[in-house]
Length: 205
Image 1 (cartoon, rainbow, N blue to C red):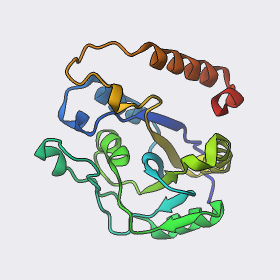
Image 2 (image 1 turned 120 degrees about the vertical axis):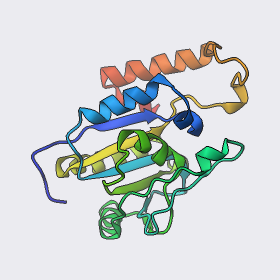
Image 3 (image 1 turned 60 degrees about the vertical axis):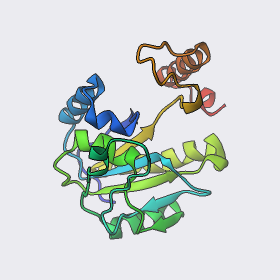
Image 4 (image 1 turned 90 degrees about the vertical axis):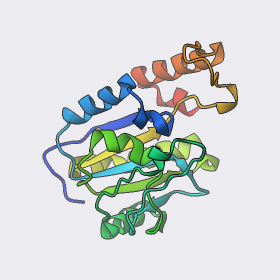
């Protein structure tokens, strides 16, 4: 992975419900603005909370598929397609570097294409996906992150897409102004404190 002069950042995006693309949510403008101030990445590596596997797997998206991995949403959402270039060779090299599995056929799930549709609508930057492996625990994911750091110097924009707190069974579906529950606010506050203080051990606990 050849180095470049630009060291790309790492982004975390809370992508929300997939039908956010059909709404006028102010977060969409935030995504556009953040993408607009970045140097153009040579490629994007996106870790998706919606691709859970027993061990880490790199997805090459050989067939450039858009996965509509949800149900019960407006028909307009199922018409959305995000078909960026695939780079099977790079995906294979990354899998080899990480010593993990490779799935060249799996398409991009909504944790990938929902934010990228807003941030990079031209669909002209190669996108590679990487699964998460909950059973391996936080320490394994921190170790994975350390191995990915070098990619930032070769023009790779690393994005993690998911939500810190996610419990649909506790969601107030009919109240758009509902306040977060106390346990969720406390957990988010603890996560934010650990992130901004650089306390990786607390995040891993």
